[in-house]
Length: 127
Image (cartoon, rainbow, N blue to C red):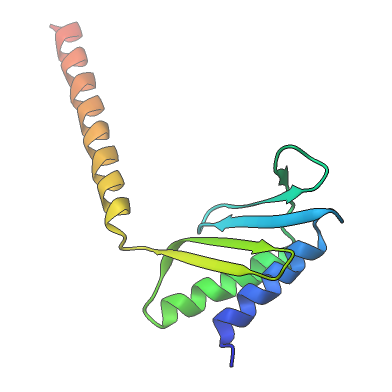
């Protein structure tokens, strides 16, 4: 029996598929807390076509994210792959993913180096 999270994803996928071109073959959607994007592969186009995500689909994904946080499984990124045959793949990248921590530390280090270089430049210029 599907749970609330499954229902939210299935509803979002149905809304996105309804807005896809009639010759769509596969759909990929990526959601983060600040950004959402979706593309579809079609029989007629050589490249993936950008798909507008309906407000209903965004609400469904927001509901999924809230529920995931409530049960202690918050995600930083949700990737949905769906094709015409009905095959659905949902992958959630958790907030505590070690790769995210590494990226955060690297960005913090770069920011500190830039600040230090700026401070040295100001001190040399004022001297």
